[in-house]
Length: 260
Image (cartoon, rainbow, N blue to C red; front, side, top):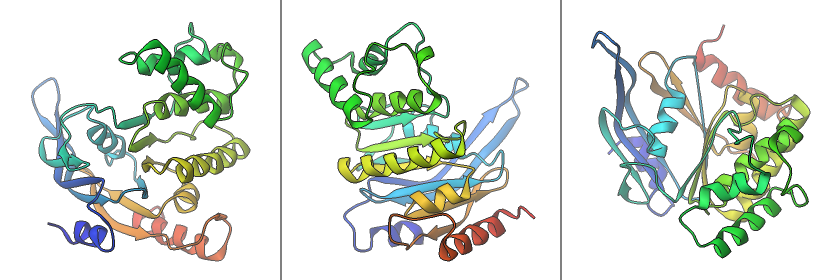
């Protein structure tokens, strides 16, 4: 077991998420394999927030899809709550960069869509509960075209939270938002995390966002993508991206990415 996994275990219960030697290759039309990820070892503790950052094409989103069970690894093992990840799981919530709302459904029906295996009464209860958590009471009957970008992404988060996930995976969830809305959404996401006690793994290109939100920042680089360093963020919350300690961490991560 890797040093990284051993470190994650120290002082904690067994990790919520474990990846050991995970790799992913895709075959093109001619059958030639292209390796997106190789040798990924990572453990994420219960209630921990981990950010994934990296150079373009290093497999960050691919890694998130593997954890979500939307793709299968070519090699290695993934475990969530001690069980192998072999497909999508009810205890995993996923939020993509785009809200991916169905334009013909209301806000409430977009959230309810994720709850089709539950009774109608339970669907209604969880939908109302999730929309209250993201502060969208009163917008239940609105259509996606009537929402701002931040509101639409809050609906996407509500849809994920309605499943009451143990782990929430987010792929650049605020990348398309303006700076003010992004900061507000970051603060609200932290409030939800503190209240709901889920584990969170998110992909971002914004180093300030990574340092502001995460307990650890996992830095990937290359093709195939590999972990070059895991950077602990030992700053008290709430954090500001312009604080000297935060800026120093951002510069360290930038250096690892070799961005110039």
